[in-house]
Amino acid sequence: MKSKKEIKDSFKEMKFQIGVFQIRNMVNNKIYIESSTDLIAIWNRHKFQLNSGLHLNTNLQKEWTEFGQDSFTFEILCEIKQDETKNIDHYRKEAKQFELMFVEELQPFGEKGYNNVKLK
Image (cartoon, rainbow, N blue to C red; front, side):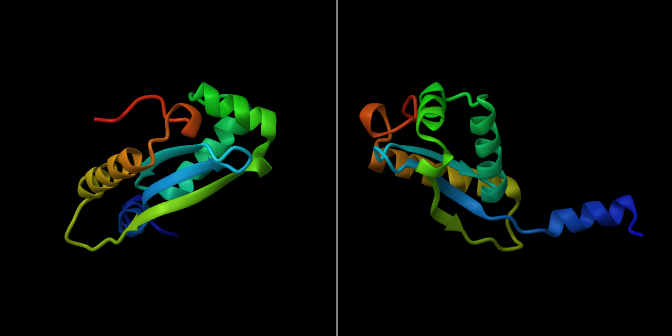
């Protein structure tokens, strides 16, 4: 059986998918853009919140409830390749920069999307 230290060390060595994703409503093509250091976990969190009616984005929640989960897709817009020389804070900042780039390019506001305000 592994010790707590061995388990922690194993967790630290794990590589998660890091990058930018969008949740797309296939009925009206509205999108929600965000970045994460764990793309699988963030998609699971959003699905859980949306299916429970607890999502903080009220417009996305309203249409998820109206159209149903099958009307939405999760799409990875970019994935950041990792190496051992950089820490998680570096990747978090890099992912946020890519998120800003995609938000600027795709403008997911109002009729085009669910993001509330422009990020700075």
